[in-house]
Image (cartoon, rainbow, N blue to C red; front, side, top):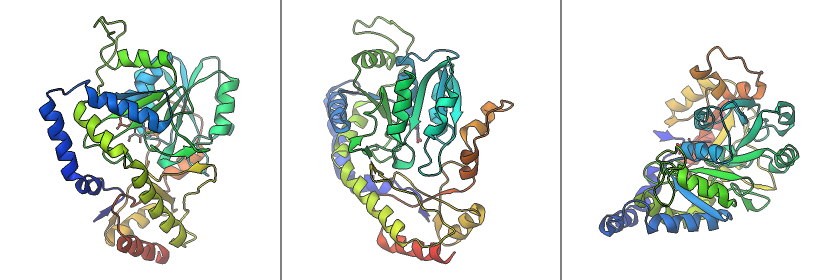
Length: 361
Ligand SMILES: Cc1ncc(COP(=O)(O)O)c(C=O)c1O
């Protein structure tokens, strides 16, 4: 069976090297908060083009810590799309803040900047931009609005590590950028981990404490924090894999170009790419009207396709009984999106077989 993503290929290709790195950490006797983490934080900040980076346990924590660092408190309103991974919104709820859902547009499936201003109230504290599927949201327009209203902005870059907007890396445009290195992500390791980047030393100092109980350099707890550390093994694997991230992103873009060129079926809506943005295709998401049949037909041909996302976050059980404004595009596309296979090592023969099936469907 061929899946939408298959991280094992990329790790298997580097198995010898990864095992050596694990052995190196094992022999060092230093497993938490050591040099591997420091190196990764330095290298990652440089790669993104931000002054600082901090490793954390995962991106859900990265988002939570960032919201707390910019000062989001109980009952504050946070603007966020509902067409995203639940984690983006769960972090807001864990701050006891109120997510205000904004619809997405049909061009890039990211937050619709036209709808932001009309959802701003005196309680609005922060805007969370999600760069979904590997492509930037319309940062030019969005940042104009956030500046005008003095909103804090956090970028959820969990799906877009290495993607560009006007030649600048995502994550470096806002107060804080949050990343996931979950195994399926473009930059990944064989477990959970994540990072934040920022140019603001105050945010960095606060998150440094918050990620470790809330204590300071004297181990004196100044805040109620959490425990969300990026350990030495994962930091060392990420250090190694970061060097190859641009190559791996190029491989994804090549696969995407093949689909974009060869899928010719008016019933399948292909993703759009924009000249000012470099899409790094964490996912290759198409839209079809009769999704159940489409998925079943492809499963019969050996392709098990994913859906990102079938249930918009505002439709999850945690919001049962709550009334939200209608999110027309979000609800429409949640019934239509399907993720085609895109991963390191996906071979031409499989891609060509898939294209033939798609063109005859
Ligand atoms: C857009 C987005 N935000 C947040 C997350 C959460 O990442 P993690 O699993 O590292 O907590 C994910 C992961 O799926 C994601 O895709």
